[in-house]
Image 1 (cartoon, rainbow over the protein chains, first blue to last red):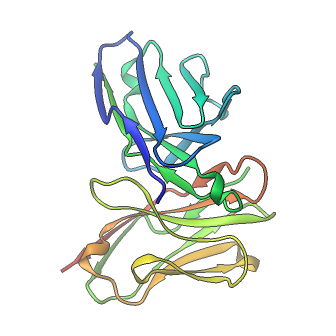
Image 2 (image 1 turned 120 degrees about the horizontal axis):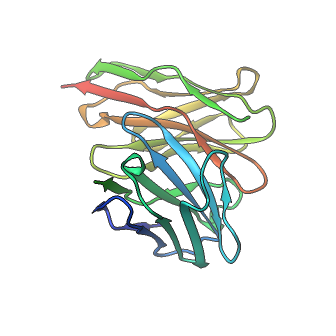
Amino acid sequence: GAVVSQHPSRVICKSGTSVKIECRSLDFQATTMFWYRQFPKQSLMLMATSNEGSKATYEQGVEKDKFLINHASLTLSTLTVTSAHPEDSSFYICSARDQRAYATGELFFGEGSRLTVL
Amino acid sequence: AQSVSQHNHHVILSEAASLELGCNYSYGGTVNLFWYVQYPGQHLQLLLKYFSGDPLVKGIKGFEAEFIKSKFSFNLRKPSVQWSDTAEYFCAVNRGTGGFKTIFGAGTRLFVKA
């Protein structure tokens, strides 16, 4: 089956620093990846759609200069939280759409990355 | 705007009880519908999906869901739950075209008592 790997699974950083989270599709090509944020006991909130070779599309209310997304290859997308603050602490989840499941848009999820900003 | 509503936030059942989790969506056009499950300590995985054809779809582990277009609903069911079904269940929808941006419901935490 399609596997998505996310790294790191946990990261703790100081306020004001930047953190990069990687999302890789291990056995399929993903022209589109999605980044979600999950608050405790809440649903997944879509942050942005990451398209290989082009700029990401951000959802309303998500600061693109704060959450930098790069999708340089068909198997890798990165999310960089710049100048992180405690309110950015959250669980970030990436997902990828397998081109073979194009007709339905089924998503495959990474393990998630828990960011804690001190 | 597209939205997904899950009616039950927390459900507690005893083993062998029947389960039905409600899901309604707001988008009126062509949609693909999904139920994802997140077991404790694991990542989200697909339980079942509907994109066309028979509105009653069967997924893994004995789960099924019925798409009722007139009611904009996609309820999840299982006739007899097991302790191992304890997890969080998310209903999700994407449009049948475009970027397949997927919107999730708030999730339902199911706890099955042994």
